[in-house]
Image (cartoon, rainbow, N blue to C red):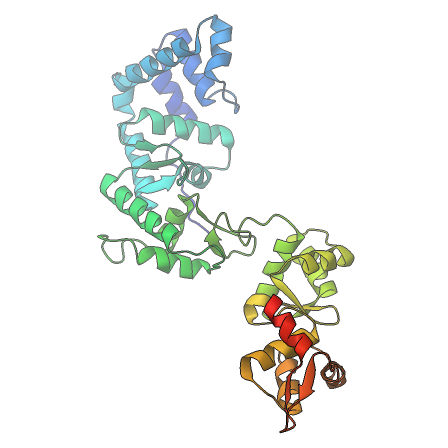
Length: 356
């Protein structure tokens, strides 16, 4: 991911919160301070506050909502309008709709200050909260029309990325922008587009920065097999299992024992053994099976082949010596020569194909 913009605050959030809370009843102020983590980073639940006052959680919610309304009607709120406008400008600079966590991280590293900014978002009537659901993260907007268009574009994007597809960040951004209808060209740059992607829970990036569907094992990496796939995908050509294990350790700081890595590669049909300890990805066109299976499939697909044609074709798929291929060709249960001296399938090989 590209380095994102950092926002400079021209006001002190804690001082502003203190002024907004001024004038409230002690209990009302305490409820807001506790619920939004304004005194301590940790936020208290409705239940926890209710137990302190021996009242129900619903009563605490009513106190909270009433206190927020009181702030919005107060002179202190009017005096803070410049601050709310500054926050609104911040959100506009990020595209008009932004993930809550992403926005707070942009504003400040201190979690307590983040809590105070979040409090301002809730209090301010400039901002609209969109709750988290199955498809989108919790987010805030200041431009309803654009927000609808961004949501629509992300919905379309979800439907046009396959389970196994891996895209660079640039490719994913272009794919998203192609579906962002009704927005003036140039309004959304690559940084803003990337932040729009963060709104989605259905697309994400893996540890190497490639994007895809969150549910894909290529994105939500869960073990050695997935790390191995990413390593080999990045390498672009077959690797020895020892190389794969070493690369996993170096790239992801995950200890990968060679023997364990080898066992995991054997069990996963994304990988094909193409030589002694060498593995390639099946998606690169490598056939599964031992050498005789590769020869059998070639003859089945292309018809009778000369020795030279078989050797040339097999060497494109396997890292081995020519003599190994010749030894397999001499297996009369699988291969025999026709009247032209070309190799064809013997009865056992034909039966083996029918069982596949």
